[in-house]
Length: 291
Image (tube, rainbow, N blue to C red; front, side):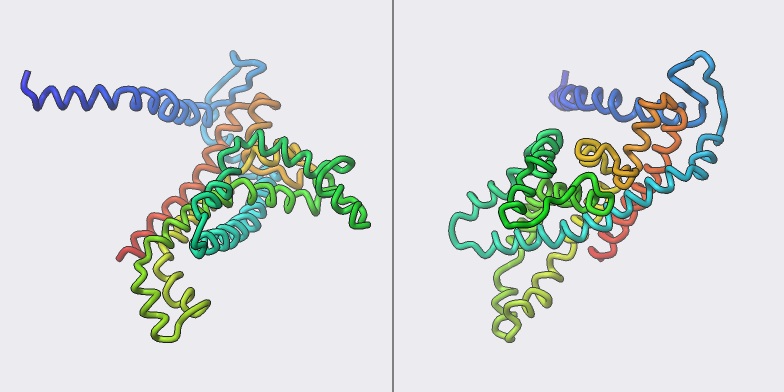
């Protein structure tokens, strides 16, 4: 066998494990979800499953609970993404300006991102506990009344956003820091000679050169925000009064509490369509930025 064929076979052999996992855990679920979306499939009576066409999609379009879940998800995204970008930018600028100990501080900043969401949720459940939580302990010592962080519908969502910021800001800051460090020093030196230092230099030099990275961070986190689920599931269970139940949680409850897999699959495709719009928006903006 020629060396060329040997290299080709070796390449396919290296690719096979990934391809197998991709088929099993990506392609097969997509096909199954597409099948279920056009079926009336109830786990309590699987033998009664039948083809219903687009009826699940029509019902989902009229579903007031799904509409409310989309509003909650949009609210989370509107609060989370700008806060995350600003916080991560501040961390990245601070790290970039550090003359010493940058790697140690960067590791500490990135540390929360390495925690699983389950660990993060349990930790912040204690922070927010009405009687024994850290935050209310501090408030009591300051002579202030304790705050029902997770049981007040007006405070629950900001509380989830705060936890999410702590959990994800470090990873986003590292991405922005990498972008900052890739900006040639000569641009800053030229701007300083022209009198554009400090904030003027940031807005006239740093931010324009970092715009592709910022665009990537904004769109990817926007996509992630529209899929938020475990934070609310762990902290509030979607309450109080459904104030924190997003689309993914409603789909989860419909499928595994209500056993309506067909209807849940249809809602999943509707959410996927929304996420795909943001994905295409990212590609379009990145191409426009590159040109």
